Image 1 (cartoon, helix red, strand yellow):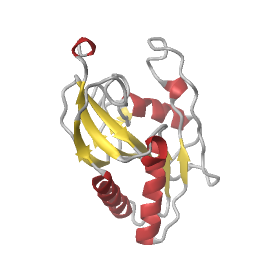
Image 2 (cartoon, helix red, strand yellow):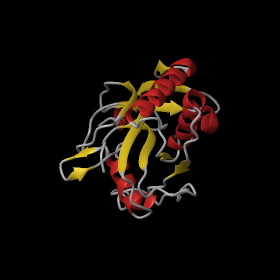
Image 3 (spheres, one colour):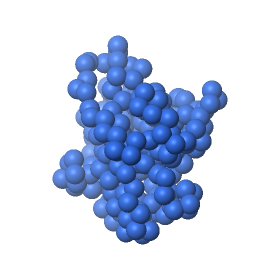
Image 4 (tube, one colour):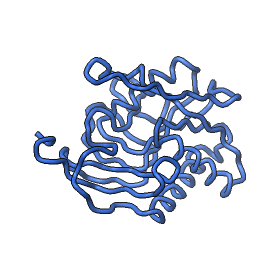
Length: 209
């Protein structure tokens, strides 16, 4: 599979292992992206997908719950508006494939929805909101292997905040955002949170240790 780089083969991942990629207790932060910037970032990613995949005729978008799913749907809308191509969209739950199941409380299972056309022989673009350690996307690759055999796998993220723990690199990035490990990147989307925003906040002192 091409597009996601790993020393052991092709691989991909999005922010997983730390408490610093999703909404959680943190001090109020500064705005990084607003609604217009998010829209422009997704439009740019959509154009890059079209260019890299020669028109996206064999592309399937799979969002990683939670916020990767609405982002994948928005990307599909951009592709339809720009090129008139209808790209299949689905979701890929990675809960049971995470490597921290024994370290964290039980998680609610998400939903995996594979488009009717399947993924065999297709270019699958995994979509997530924040790329951090890389462990979420590594789990997504394991989950993907259980539902089909794509021709290639690529990774699209709205924000790449660095601090990779695995050798994984996104193919499409809305914004590269250098961060400290004690900072929290909060992504809010209208579909899940009632608003579109990306903010960078500081963990409380006791949580940053």
